[in-house]
Image 1 (cartoon, rainbow, N blue to C red):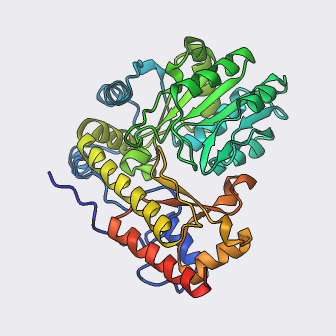
Image 2: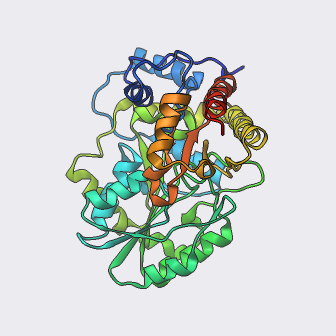
Length: 395
């Protein structure tokens, strides 16, 4: 089957959060503008998923739906085939999204006032989940060296040693900087988590997006002692553009940890999943692997396009090639603009709609996160719009 990664679907006026946000930012935005912000894709869903859901509707009743055997097998087989991770059906807990999962986990495994460690810049709902649950954010900033980020293990060890700090909220692969952590880095991290009795929430939603030459290691496989102190957050939503289906698979090996987590999720009935979520996930994992493999080639092309554009046209703006995700972390600091000035310039003058770096923590000041999961031609159009605005400004 030939897959379509070139058509742009018109998402105006249908409730797309990303597109509605762009229009809210600039009501008279040009027709050729495409937002590069929130992390869903501008690609049609895999045809195997769409056709499978149509067939499902022909023969099904959309009543209350629980996990079923073929769905669970699909999740288990995917982890084994793509990630060499052997899990069991009982380990899988379902939530309406990964954000909902780490909100619940923070409540389940800490109390008000406890510290939650993060490595900023980091996915901004991490920071919101900590504050919304009356916990204390404990930031150990990543170390940046010429656009490459590493974990500050010395700083992490110091933070972990404080008895008031109970949780590490961890992103692997990392959003927004695009690191795929090496096995050696994860082993160091696991040793500190175990030594200081931290609870580990590992968000691995991006684990299917890894660039050539890199390998994602599932954190739970790094050390057997992690099982009693962690949850692993996975989902088909990034990989197959299924965020609207509202299903995440939280993998928890330890039965006591699993019980505590499920109890917290059930308090707000976050365990009720819509029937389409289960079926879409099953169809994605069992029939759409080839679509994903083709998608990964497009993402690599787009990452390279962005990198080359800035290197050749505006070398002061840095766009390193990420090791994973379909995001790219752009460094605009050389322009000398404040966060507010940069945001105004990109929205009003360039019509280049991103996620501002500062929302990922102050370490993101002067940066912008873009989403390259869109047709290459459309990405090129957005870059040319940016180029014209930069030239007009004399940059």
